Image (cartoon, rainbow, N blue to C red; front, side, top):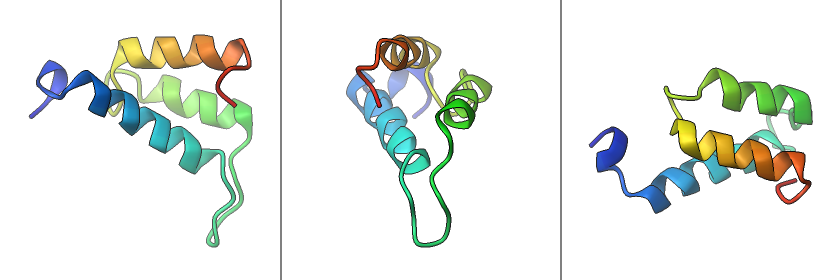
Length: 67
């Protein structure tokens, strides 16, 4: 499956999981800064992540709802 064939909830979860991974310390690396993590979302908009989901996530980040 690709694009719109993937259920919307799965596309949301994929982005949320990636955001959490980028923004969390791991055994193998420190968390990414907010700015770098945001740039990762932007760079992968339309590639790894659904563009509409990225746009919504960026608004939530800007409002402080998504940390």
